[in-house]
Image 1: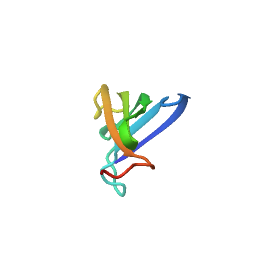
Image 2: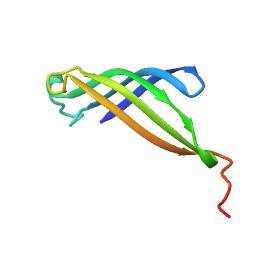
Image 3: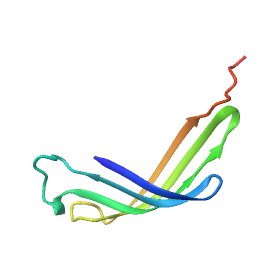
Length: 91
């Protein structure tokens, strides 16, 4: 399985880009291209600084299938959380 993205920052905490995801079951003897799952599409990346060094990083994408084995359109939502430097220990 693979996933990749390229993004360009529009301003602090906001970027646009292109994402791609797919699966190749057996690299030594792969299925024909039309039977593999591959998708690509635009995405929006954001970042929200939260309390005490926690950052929420949601991103949203609309992905289009490139093969018959892949759905025509899929919506992807990913929400991540990052701990950044400067976190104070609980008292």
